[in-house]
Image (cartoon, rainbow, N blue to C red):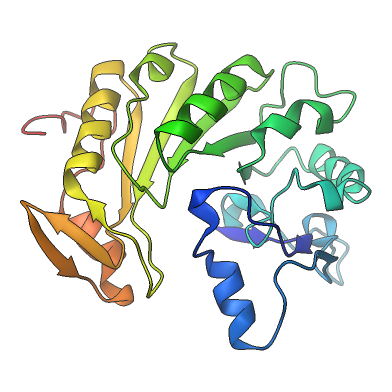
Amino acid sequence: MTIWNPWHGCRKISAGCANCYVYRRDESIGKDASVVSKTGDYALAVRKNRQGGYKLTPDDGVVYTCMTSDFFLEEADEWRPGCWDMIRERTDLKFHIITKRIDRAGKCFTPDWGDGWEHVTICSTCENQDRTDCRLPILLELPIRHREVIAEPMLGGIDMEKYLATGLIEHVTCGGESDPRARPCDFRWILDVRRQCVRCGVAFTFKQTGAEFIKDGRNYHIARKDQMSQARKSGCSYTPGAGNAAGR
């Protein structure tokens, strides 16, 4: 896995942004995360080594793009075309773009986007039912080859089955909030979305419990270092055809 942050900083736009980890980290070093700026890693995707080869290779894994901002952020409109040029050049890499601004994606695609690029996955967030019903219809309508959904931080029960049933969403990830001020994540919500994914044959990942986790009616405070491992131990992740749907 590689993280490519061509710009840094973002504006909060929905409930899931309340305890944004980027704001938390920037605040700890006296930085204002609402200020959007181009980074020194802007050209990382096409940077070359002394031998003239690309520094990033397919062996470096999926390139997670704009993880400390949003790829479709308005303030980055002038920089985005250059990123599309780099992504177009690097068809040997897999780019993964997670956004809360799927409503802007259509107007931000590069002119030769067509029905999407095979090496680019667009992932829309949806932290609650309201954002699910707002964002996922747009995700499904847009010309995208590979679509995913991430409900993190998951702030309530979510019914997304009618969107999964289209067969256009390849993967769903759910998880709790890791912030020290975390809002609770109930295991029942996770299991319900998992069942929806199983019924529709969509891959599912339970990424992390979050700091405040509810299971069987009991509240647990989970240390940051244990949140992902505890999620893995639950055995909730699901791969269609792998025979792992039983009991959930």
